Amino acid sequence: MRQTLEMFIYRKNEQETPATIPLEIDKKTAAGLAKDLLWLTSIDEAPDAPETWRAEVRRSGVVPPAPFGDEAFQEVDDLVQAMKSVLDQSNIDICALVPVAIDIEVSPGIKLVGYIPNCTPGAPMVATEICYRAGAKAYEYTPALRRLAIRLLIARAAGVEINKGFVLARHEGWPNKPDHIVRFRTVMLAASITQAKAKERLAMLCEMARTALVTPCASFGKTTDVENDEMVNSFDSFVSGDDFHQSSEFIVFGDNPEFDEIFHLKSPVIKFWQLHRKILALPDSDRPSVYTVS
Image 1 (tube, one colour):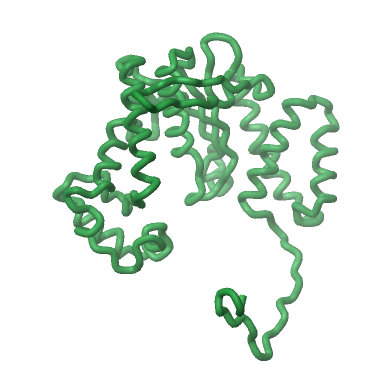
Image 2 (cartoon, one colour):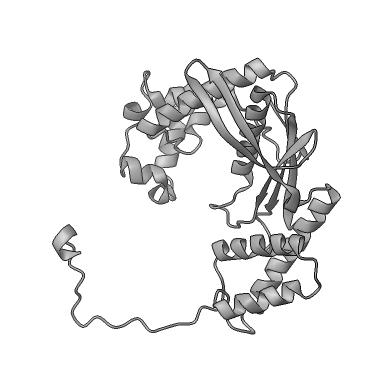
């Protein structure tokens, strides 16, 4: 560190950090355990399979020793049982999910080649997205809705019969708010989005990707969502907020960003977000069980 980065890490009389045994697991680990247990219980229906899995996890040291790890296991069990119940009601067998190959030309010189993951077999197919992560800042539900909407857009552009998708996610309020353990939403494309229109929107998405590769297209809170005459106030409110110094915008633009330098008339950032609004429009309300993307 000293020779390469000129960082002097020596501290005189520095005390050693005492070794500690963690008494809880972090959210990322809990999400991984939930995913493992859901797949295990879907593949292996033996009554002793979950208990065997718990014993292996305990031996691995991933969870705290008993009895401190019991609460973590109970939380994972409750989440998995809630997810299995929703999947069973929707006739979705995660062991039978398959990827669907895609190879289309969305515009001259631009091709999309790859797979739409986690689709039910048969016709019509259903694309699924299962999210296990908790925590407000790392919550996966809204990004999952957008990912699934884009996959449906790709399917329509390719002429593949995937007409809807399901998002199943851990509820961001659970377990502190025990009323709901999971969220489950159906995502559909509006009938007005034809195959030709789907290709047009994917071409715009590719243009956005090229812009984002060379320009940091930050939103600065809700600055890019409001009308033009309100953008300055929204920008100032975000920059002066308590959370600004923990944001990605602070890391990229520093502690004193200027609105006119980022959102000028010819700014690629403005064009990026204008295209973003044209490609997908999700409902503002969190109430509908079916999200129709227009």
